Length: 88
Image (cartoon, rainbow, N blue to C red):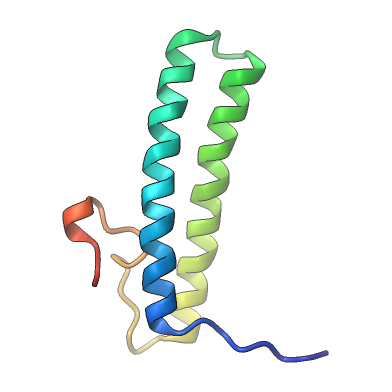
């Protein structure tokens, strides 16, 4: 099995910022869909799943960051709390 190079800390930061923005956009879209369609509709279910999948990816990436960079780990990289808290 070929060993792959892991992401750099800067790559993690860039991906984290992108996932944060995507998650916020999806959440806005999901809320609009949920306000327009029944909770159990395919539209509402799919929009809720989309947000969940991005959250799941952020969780896995946060874990990889902690494993790959234990000395530089910062929980605010993948979970900044708000756009003003994002790690640069």
